Length: 177
Image (cartoon, rainbow, N blue to C red; front, top):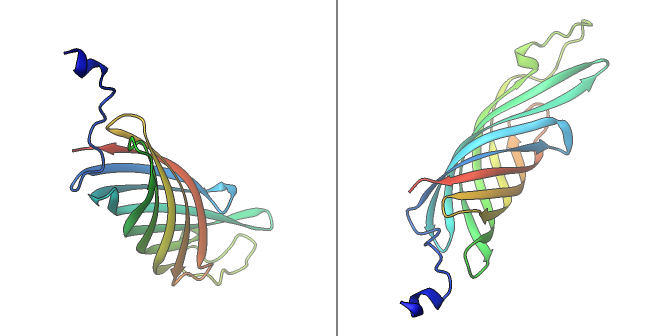
């Protein structure tokens, strides 16, 4: 009995193949306080703390024109793979790099091309497609709750506004099995 008590702390098994987690994330786009993104995803671990990620995201970036703000909204679906490249011995902290395919729809000024001053927007609503590269840190608070922090660069073709968007964000993951 005393051997079991003095043997140190035992850590639960984490990141086992087949484990799943539900992620909720959000953050800033392009370093501007009015530009943001929100998303959710499902992570499925495949071994060695690597994981498949499938999710959806909403991104809004505003552009100034005279005294008005013109919003660009993107609705995207994601499928990707994240490779763990650094972790501590207790499996509490992980650093991963991921690559994802993205596809979705972009709306500029909620589909209204005519502005209040009579100007006409050249940007159109469009289907968008491309990918993203993500650097993400995970920190286990408990065996079922994980804090996330990450930086991501998205490149999407089909947009009539811009192809690139840098995201800086945080989130929480709940391990569900």
